[in-house]
Length: 302
Image 1 (cartoon, one colour):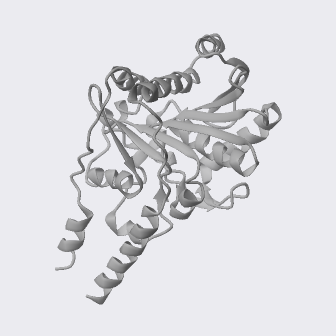
Image 2 (cartoon, helix red, strand yellow):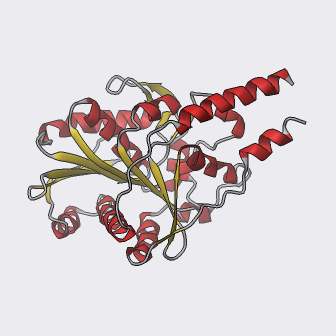
Image 3 (cartoon, one colour):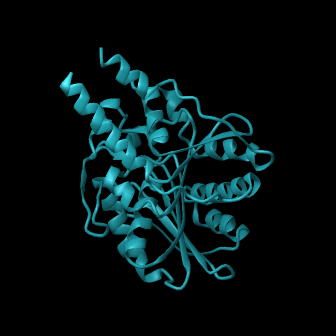
């Protein structure tokens, strides 16, 4: 009984700390929001294309390609583009084309990071280190820097935004698609001021790995997401989650085996096709989670 009480008190303390995370401001109308998400989705998807296609996609949004290269020895490539009219630059990072690898790679341990002062996913941070060193000389400190990416590329894009923020750059939007977790509770809290939007599909398991067991909520070292999560429901519907509500989505998959169907929900084409119907008359709906933390504690107090 005392053990349960201690666990419950620990959970309450953690819950209180997480509820104190600042809430991001409303981004405006749904039409404007999903137009922006669609533009970022096309740029994130462009990182999988050849140079000519990248330049074509960027030109449609007023950007000029500055550099595009593969990171030797790493599973990612990137490009940097600039929009002189809006005085903005954007970094887009490509993830692995092998979704099974994405599920395995997110299991690496969290280690202290020299750029940020927080613990980060070892593999993602190594990719971000290399990319940051390569691109720094081409960044314009007078411009706002935005980052985006899909899958592992989204994870690296988020870490790069942290590096840029720590380095004194003007960091704008961080918009990722199917992004796995990159840091723990305290790391997420330290960088909660960043404007992070994580776009996910309901059955994409990559953003939920490592899976969350309710008992993990007592541990401040567990992986934890940053920012606002936009869940792309069917048709023109979407849900929006933050903090504990976002993390608890993983409990729906605790006893579910990874299947090819889950992997298909991770593809960038699925994300673009899911955003498109929401460009007109998007409708925000509640997210229905089958799991209740209160039910869990009640059951385990018996």
